[in-house]
Image (cartoon, rainbow, N blue to C red):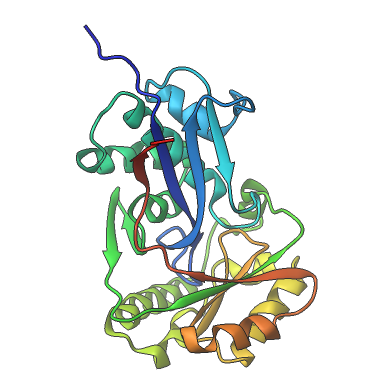
Length: 278
């Protein structure tokens, strides 16, 4: 006889910022703002919600409520976090252990999302490199902050991807491969001086930023105020900057009007399940 479904859990999943400049679909950082999934609720999520679809696909039953601490459609990994949250919620409901299942959840969430970078960061936390279905956290020798500039408009990921070319030159591909390798090495070594060059990109940012001049200005302002690196967060329109925590307030203050600046920590813990004692 199958065990009864549990209803005493809370799933908590961090947001994420992907690409980090040159590492298109290959690197993402988990951010310390969260999405929560809980059972039941008077305002339960509709069946079309990505968290609910993931929950149903993994065998979840009954209604769930999704509480979001960050906006969707802004390049902060909302749909990826929601899908991870729904899958983890199904495991929590049926009292299945999360840790042995993370690799399976990564595969399922990535298949639903269509790419693996955001879901890997939300699932594992930290800065994560992902390729070929494998996800590995990049070791960070010191604390770093992420300052984000979030404008009050949305970007559709499918429409943003349609701006990208079907082919790129060998020179541009080599440029991005080199920058991505340098970025991973600089992060792991704590080489702050290399980060600005390491986040240069020739594959996607210029085409997307051509329609988001305010985001480009926010990135330039962050770098001018002392950020170590800046990039278009996911498909945008959010700008993100990697910052020494001591400079975070100054960088946030330098960002232009038209968007909300937030100083965030890197979420060192990915998706979690806790038992609701209330």
